Image (cartoon, rainbow, N blue to C red; front, top):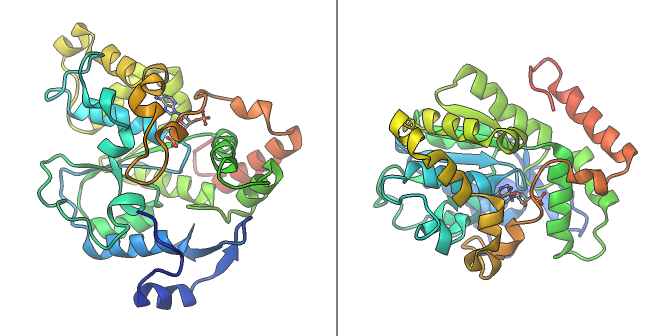
Length: 316
Ligand code: A3P
């Protein structure tokens, strides 16, 4: 699925030549487009998406920064939305035999990598997609569709450490200092963190039927309440009978870190977006950063996020 950086259209090359650029730790160039940083191949996919995507009012789009709980949200939303088609249990369910990223695919990292994805028009409603784009870039392509966008965010420190674990397997000599510097500078894939979080937060305040703002920490703390929130928002609330039958607990069990990370389907294989399935499962949970970041690193990151979010009503 992946293209080389110079394997992009003339249109994309022209755009790139007009955009601010910076190098990442490995020397690979990132470009700033509509307030967010991308590698050329993702930029090309975003252009493809912006040109071709036709939203349906019934579409569901799950949005996040990488390492914020995307895999979990994909599993939960899929299980909730399709619960009448696939009863959530541990005997037979698509989530038991396939990775969540193959059941809910990324727009810009998967479906639109090579021009446009055939077959999207034929998919039955409701279609569920995912993205790491900030709200403003997604919004442009939705062309005022009232479709549902669910955003999940996570403490920057856990996101950063999770991403570092993930990337340091692929990139040698990638130190924590390097990634902290990238996040503080904001020049990182889909970053700056605080800009993206704020883009969805602000929209969720003014357009609460369109954007639901969720937090990984709240999902860990009160998973039932958060799943109920998702179902309500997506227009498929649990009935009293359903609640009494234990379906919410069943969905949570099916989508739990323990269950998903131990499935053969998630221990082996590679997702349609090119990432080994096991790469989406670390330790899970909240506060793992504590074992890695120094107090000074944590303070710098917190201060930076706090400063940006000041007055927004959002706090970490
Ligand atoms: P850690 O690396 O901190 O363990 P994303 O899905 O956005 O890439 O985020 C990955 C993070 O979510 C990883 O965090 C991973 O362990 C955690 N995760 C994956 N599946 C999960 C689940 N079912 N429940 C809770 N956390 C999950």
